[in-house]
Image (cartoon, rainbow, N blue to C red; front, top):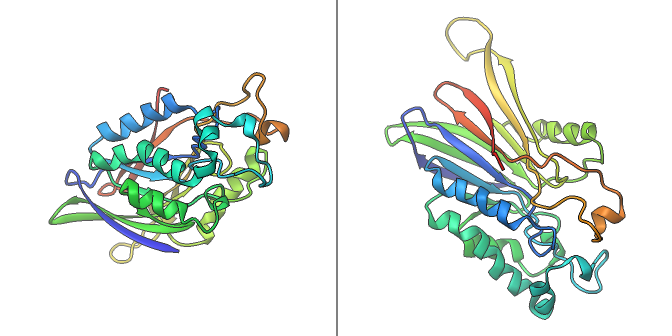
Length: 269
């Protein structure tokens, strides 16, 4: 498990907003590039934004690999197939680096499709060149927000994810099971291309003072993919295997550590 720490100057209460960037698969014709750019623009404009790229920047499959499908890829990637890894790094940097250029913290998790480009060091190179903090396949972030003399700490666990099933129940159970991996305030995953956002007020006892129940908010987030669902006259692994339509909403988690509160904000696009 990779570890990272970041301090973000905010207001005195330490308020920040967490933006998950789900699976891009940016070399596919189905990639919602304009929608992603709107999401990126929202991150850049928000001075209290923290961004977390959840992996699967590209399909990652090349000729000869299982499930490679030339017909699903954008023309510019087909024409650059002989230098696919290098070309994808360049394109991935062009998509993500604007976030860090604007001074917004960006963390990057490796997805299963990124791992198809084995031995290439693709995800690490993408993170380094985009100015992101690399978390490999899974990591914990200690995020400190507020003023220099009054900092608040929020812990975040992030993994691309695995499995999850086809129906909402197993996907949700898979997400909630991350609580068994480590103790964190926020748990993040992606992988199943289905948005989920839960904030659970967990009862606990204060470490000192009056004996009473207090609530500690714990958030569970799963990022949607930036892929058009059910394209006409187009194939692909997801359509060939009859994957169902899913919730592709884009949700911001607003966290106010001083008050111990969290709330969901859905993007209007």
